[in-house]
Length: 285
Image (cartoon, rainbow, N blue to C red; front, side):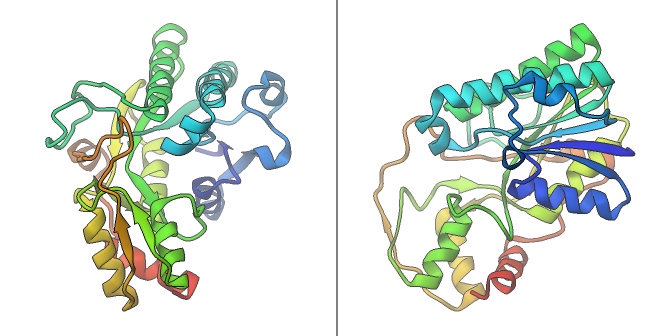
């Protein structure tokens, strides 16, 4: 990899990824709404210089944003992905496509990449449609695509609409935090581990159209996340659970990472406690 295009380059993951690539002397082409560039405008991609690798990070992301901006979510996450794939087709670039948890019941099982799919929210469905587009462009137009089903990422600089930054903000202000259920499970991956996996997989001789889970091996309940935050910061967070989950959201996201470990000998290095300590130092919690 000599030149990489990053869509969503001004976002949380995009900034960290761009920094890591540039430190490794890889030329980065940045594409971002902050530069008045839109995925849904093919002409904004048409004049870009060629890259050998594309990290397609730009999206309407998450449960809340996709529910509140449903039409925009499908427009950006589906039509925008078509436009990026057309760019890759034109310049013969490898596409790295971050996806999400799209697996079917039983949710108690740690999911492998070959397990059945059944997205249940607008966000996961738009991401699955993006996956299908990647497979179609690989099958029909020989575009080299790589799909990465990614766990919940966190780290310094993340927007305060996500859970761990929300917890950090409430620890600062000592206000009540209102959440749904204490037993919801997620895999939380620190940003440095995510970037490391993305860059290594991008440079690995992966099979075109392949899929990898990128996650921690350990799941964490919301209650345990709050306990760990308390241990790290020595502060107690006041929380009120409604007991009501969000409609159609899956409470258990258990992910098997055997495949990525075997393929590139990768596994996350930063535990949840270590990651929260890094976040504490960066935000003076």
